[in-house]
Image (tube, rainbow, N blue to C red; front, side, top):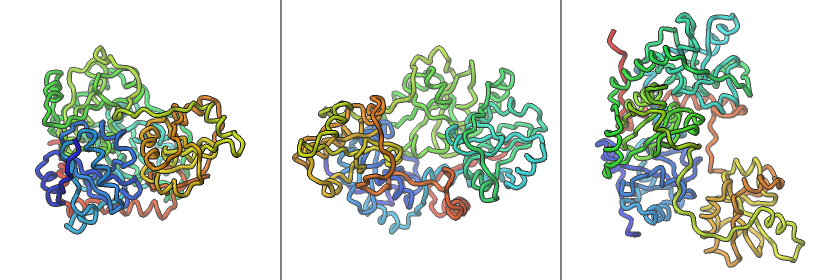
Length: 541
């Protein structure tokens, strides 16, 4: 039932954060404006995608929610939409983003800021070892006994990597390193694109007590590029299987670390009690690789490889103060990745547990993780061949206009010929810029978002509205041609923030500016004062 929207002051939000009471501070703008300025624990949940993303990001319907924008008029409709989905404690942040700033709240830029700020704090307090690109390049050129391990996702590694590097995403490092560098004299270098995942990856190995000398590549591929060195592209080198003996050694070290950090050991009964606790939000994540997850996983667990989970806590745990339960391959085959991930999440201030009696026999669900959106409305559907025929119709025989509501990046890579790209929240303004049409057909990657937008469009036009059945993916599957490029944009491309560390063509000034920003995060954390991070000290000698 939709009720009045109460206001929540910035001071009240701070009190929730300081007291560790559950709260979701939701920024409903698109990713680019969100990345320009937002509170530390604000999570971006686009007003365009409330029905698709709220159910899995906000799993408890009576959790406290504060919604804001920056004066764009998005917050109140988004809050009403959350209420219509059954969320009963929805508030508007008093004054929006400006109100937070005027109340003395610290503003951060970029994305995944809690994790990035935590990484800088780890380096600051633990003096995580690192080497500049010039030293690493010299070691490699001299044929020294060195392995370079890339802690990013495999697709990022393929885009660009240090020549000779091996893809070992963050949660895999402690499990695989003893096989990748069995000689304790082998130097291990950990890198990412910038700083966070190389710092956390390196400190993971230090914390786990591997005997090898280990260091982060200072400033990652950005530092490598700024030093004038070339990157490799399209590489396929990945980690192999962990041997039983070294896996056992890694398990003992990881579980001891999780205990020291304050993570909770969960057996099936304890997990069941967490699941049954209706007063707390619970996230359940399988931290293995997506391939292992798809081959078989525990019912109720989503897929969030551990390194990325630590990197993207704002995405995978939108409710600050929630509980997080982690699973991996279990004691039969692993028991390392969940414990290592838990030891980091505990330091990030989460109440986190890792499953101790998880076995392969319990992995009864098969397949890739699928988001569970709110129920999609019934709409008129048009098949790809029928749309293709309509678009070929001669002038005067009924015009059809196609609107693409997918991501702008997907649109640029390939869209139905003649389609216009528009944000769902921009439909009214976009419609005013279009010629009259006898019918509108909406599409997106898989058809879900366009089905939601069909009702929005039907409310502002008298022309019939239909949805491409199965979205643009079905158009491609039918063998129909695509058009590429920014051919017809009705909205600004603000749905994606361009990270200065991604891709291969970022300006040097942007890369250096990003590094300078990261260096200042520890001071920003101190000014903000709400983080609750506790960096694990070195183990007693």
